[in-house]
Length: 243
Picture 1: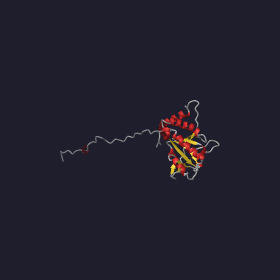
Picture 2 (picture 1 turned 30 degrees about the vertical axis):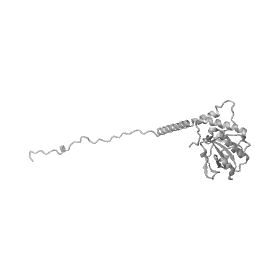
Picture 3 (picture 1 turned 180 degrees about the vertical axis):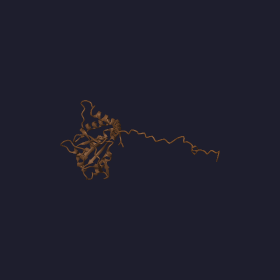
Picture 4 (picture 1 turned 90 degrees about the vertical axis):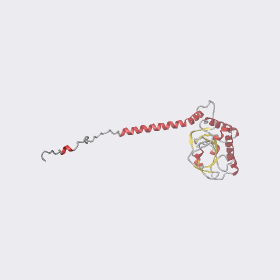
């Protein structure tokens, strides 16, 4: 139409205020593999150091008591029993109870001081004397007697004499083969395993052997050794088996 003005098609389209912009590409520097490995190694080392510090703190009372007993003892004092160096750790054996035949792990005895007799089930005069002295030594500890357990390791499969059981009511009586036992306990040269009484600490370490063929007179010296052990460990060992 004459005189009319048509709108400019391009003017009807509003101009976008925000035009699309090209994407920016930012490149971040990746850590070098050797740097990552070194950082991991440092963290692992620090973790191990912390773990060792915790273990040392927990073991400090035990270490201190042994240091007192073995090192800081008065001049002129001698142990009657022979200290075992290095100590021998209790094996992970599953044994059989001579009382009822039930299986029992030897390490269930850990957590108490142990006074150990070794003999076959026939239990001749020497064995009877060892069991008697074992019982008397424990009773002689007075209020500390509940920190020490009696153990008889029977070295054969024969039945234990019924007359012995009343005196063994509070003892652990377990069967073990002599070949196995020789891997843990050992007698003095020229003696047999049956000749000695053996002391095992609450951590399961065989740490002392009393001289062969104790009698009533020499048993008093053995009792003094046990009393010193009880005093030296009083800060960390309590009566009753620790779980």
